[in-house]
Length: 215
Ligand code: GRF
Image (cartoon, rainbow, N blue to C red):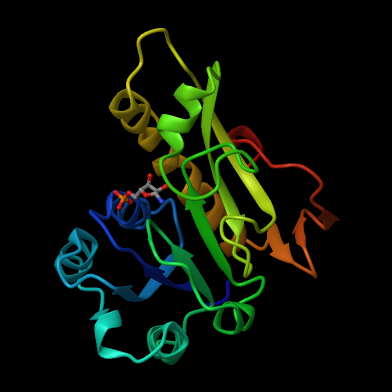
């Protein structure tokens, strides 16, 4: 066996997806090594979770940089310096400069709480309820310059029940995100999922999102 996949993560918030990844690694289900957890928010719970797990952390403030591109170049530069093979955006809530992102084509993934291409951006649970959808879900996609617009590789679905609130959907969906993200990273670590100008799974160009059972 070769060396484990080296994974860096960026997160802006509480870090439950990061915690799920660390738990998967600790239980032996996810053969990865975490090189860095970075944030644009010094108070992000994700940083504390990473530090408690012995993972190096970095927190940079956008206010300290003249432009978005300068900030992104600095933070993504730290990710590159960590030696990461794969960058995981796990609740990273900033739009990233196109030139900075393009350097990570095929090597960066994001988890988004909607069935993309529905509901890119914010407030996905509210928009799902407002639309009267009977189904909601989460997507993992490769990151491109287009916000939440890169090729989707896997999705998990949940039913929307009568009377569901945004908080209900967020809570039930998070459980699925916590399975989906480790499963996708596991598929990348094993070499089943990769990138050749677009996502490739088991040697074939992926033309529709995978579900958890296929991963
Ligand atoms: C998740 O729902 C993720 O999909 C979204 O923000 C939330 C982050 O949660 N982008 P956490 O910080 O991983 O707990």
